[in-house]
Image 1 (cartoon, helix red, strand yellow):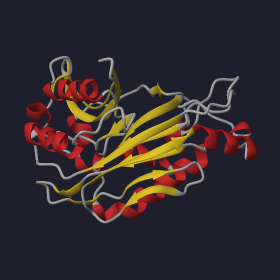
Image 2: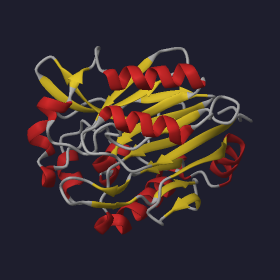
Image 3: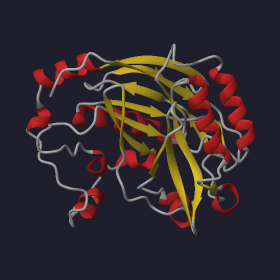
Image 4: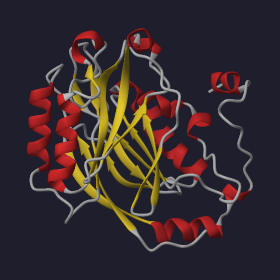
Amino acid sequence: MTTLSTDLRTTLVQCDLRWEDPTENCSRIDQLLGDLNHNSTDLVVLPEMFATGFTMNSREMAQASDQSEVIQWLQHQAIKRQCVMTGSVAVKEEDQFFNRMVWATPAGELTFYDKRHLFRMAGEHERYAMGHERVVVELKGFRVLLSVCYDLRFPVWLRQQPEADQPFEYDLLLCVANWPKPRAHPWRTLLQARAIENIAYVIGVNRVGSDAKGNDYSGDSMLVDFKGDPLCDHPAGQAFVETKTLSMTDLESFRKAFPVGRMQTVLPYSFKLCGFVEGLH
């Protein structure tokens, strides 16, 4: 693989969310971002369901994907700030509802990833449909795998699945979340584990505050490097906006010096035993 010298500036936005109030949440985030633009960042990452909180009220809160005011707001922000904006929103597609991660570019283009693993303990599987496609996007030479919250607990789904001529499929894993405070330790541990086993950067952006269901959120948003070391770590439970730079040069150098990816055997996710394998984790 050709060594790239490109750096990627990434901005983590850890914020409180007002329950089921898209207008207020979008306004708050706009204020938090201030004058942030392409001069200081390439990518802004918002939490899961950043416009509503983790609502199971899909019939009332989800908007048609092609008419969603929240998606239009995200798209407008990307164009205005001239950087990629991403986070997940509740959307309606025909007669189904999805927890959909939206990747909005400065050119006005949109890419979607529908959450694969729905959080059964909250009844998410009864209110939203499961996604089926892995989505990898590219930004400044970095290949980025998209994921949402509970996906993080399923290493087979997030494992590198490279083409035959390349040892790695992606360079950065993004996980946006509403991950409650009582399970902060698994969240932090799994972010580091996904980075170590896939030799890739990992960004996990979580919310803070409390929701209408009585769940408390400590945030614990992190940027973890390919060795599992945190480069950005906020366990204090407060809102913040922080930008860090990812180095492709450092990543490629480590991969060449420690070529674990060239030795791993990857099972396709569609393999019949995959459900059994995931059930063990």
